[in-house]
Length: 283
Image 1 (cartoon, rainbow, N blue to C red):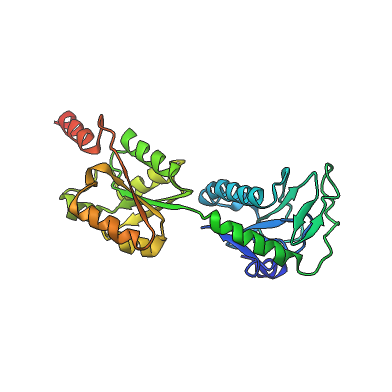
Image 2 (tube, rainbow, N blue to C red; image 1 turned 30 degrees about the vertical axis):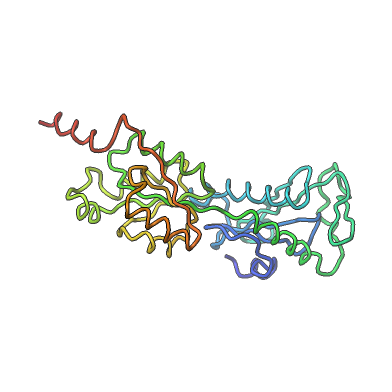
């Protein structure tokens, strides 16, 4: 992130939520109660230069921002501003709008511009008002935790069964991380190399709308993965449910607050079935 921008908006001091690519913080100058800043973590001055991953995550950022403000202040509308005329950093100003006074810490605050466009020169003149807003929103944000989900697979010969599991997983979390098994790990476990190369399998999964991040799975140790990605839920095929190994995994992960969720496979298709059909065709 641009250093001057960071200092001007006191991003680290007023941080609310830390996403993978974006930071949500309280705006030092409050135009309306609950004024916030959404800033890209890396240094970048053009909106057109953000990556597809950064763009995809914005949907989650906006959703969490609006939900947090609604829980805290029950706004009527949200105004987003993305100007970057002065500050050389991709960011959005977030201004909740109100048709009635808002109470905070025993005082009442009005949106004096309502229902007209916000007057950007009309700042709430009160010492440490941003810290009062930060305190309240932090208390609310504890209730509004970002749920990170994690699942893995080879995803060879990608089919509808893969898509169904990823769709179901995304419904269960805010951010979905998918581990794609490396060729080496697949060979050591299943004694066969995937038909589709790792780079292409990753590219396919990365472009599924339900997926927020794709990583390599080069070990079957799920606790090593948790150390890296700090997920809250792990999604697994239902054929593992009730086995001795996964009964123990449930107990071990429960100690660190991770829930294991089992999904049934799509019975009509599988990579194994597709592979055998292809082999028959080749013959």
